[in-house]
Length: 272
Image 1 (cartoon, rainbow, N blue to C red):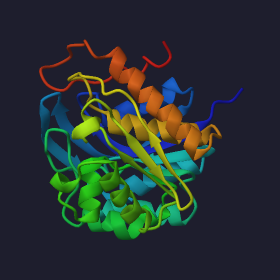
Image 2 (cartoon, rainbow, N blue to C red):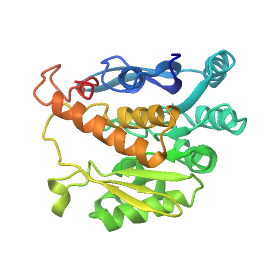
Image 3 (cartoon, helix red, strand yellow):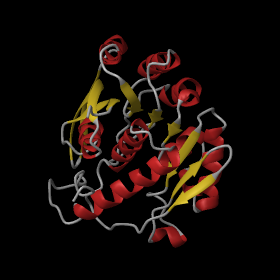
Image 4 (cartoon, rainbow, N blue to C red):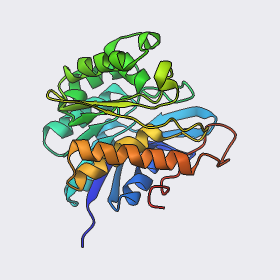
């Protein structure tokens, strides 16, 4: 049988925990052939990001067109797009119908607090790319930034739902707000994610895994979701699988010691 092909448009993580490296491993874990278009190169490790070099939008587009004219791409995810011009260029490619089952992970800031999108990027996501997405997958901080809300005011599932509704109004078909950073009340021991469409709200809950090895969870979840869509799963089922995949990856790597900071997850823990 021929493997299904998916495309990741994202940045490189030299530490191998997140970014396009995490996307490739996630696609492989789902038995999906990984193709890529690089948007930025980062110098980073488990301690943080020290430098970024952005790829020109023309070359990002050239990579995408090289892939889609030769491969039968069944699903696409975006990760770090780095600058407004790249976000807008990717949106033009999506508007041409070249990026099927588009999962947009609006990467705005690293776990260590380093900005991963230049000025104008948030507005470009809102106005250009998010309206074309099948699923948008912001974490708590990204959702708050997109909605211009103080993240300290987001304390429970009701607040997460309000963020999801605001982002849904921007035009995507589904919004998946990840609640891993929600640490108030009952969420101190759980990591709830909310999937919202115009017709339905679903809460995917899981026990919070206490570990320092959580670098790349957001990238991996969106890649797993895209892989599932490419394999023909519904958004609901693909999200459930992606949530299970990340939980297994966190649990399997919980005692690893790779680097001195926030280490990577085990992308093959799910298969085991």
